[in-house]
Length: 70
Image (cartoon, one colour):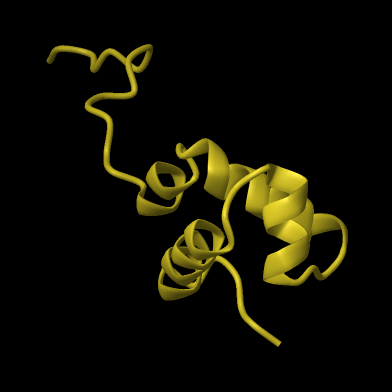
């Protein structure tokens, strides 16, 4: 009987949450919100992006249930 090689984890499986956080803007949003709630205007100013772009990324993160609006 052959021993299985346990040094290799095998093929990479998709992890949707990690794929979403690969985007630097979404990562920045999550980072900012980890410290305190912020408005879209605050996020846009702090990240140097437009409000519509931040809103788009917030919708993506909400749809993936990585954050919630209050």
